[in-house]
Amino acid sequence: MELQVSMKLEMKDSPGQLVSVIQPISDIGGNILSVIHERDPEAGGGDLLDVQIMCEIPEGSLDTLLAEFRTREITVLRVGEERLLVRRSVILIGHLIHTDIGDTIDRIDSTGYAEVHELSMVMPAINEPSSAKMTIKSDCLTDINRALGILRDVAGGDKGFLIIEPLEGN
Image (cartoon, rainbow, N blue to C red):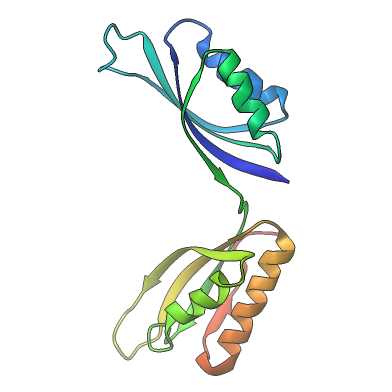
């Protein structure tokens, strides 16, 4: 399994330093998703470079990567792991507010294996059905499907709303 990791790094602003960040990620079998680098205008002589990087790395390899950064004199200012990499989005249509969308979200979030990551809603009028795009995240497709099963049960049960699913391909 892969982990999505976001890092903020600080290093000397000299030729080749960005490669010293990217190479260790490649060496452990990681995949770089985005890189943002900028010179720190408040750093005295302008000799420091801030780099924000988002990458996917094999589970269990983060400590190795951080140790390699230390040997290369790269300061790690912040690290954040994202373990829920599989996402599925669905459209919900019905009286979502009147049937307590918060309860629906809680039923998924309380599983411990999936969570609602995003929710965008349109409410045309008080007595009209509303629609929402809901994105659910989990570790694996099996758990996403379990969470979608919970959502189907809720929709078909006492809440009676329609689900259009999934927006992404399998």
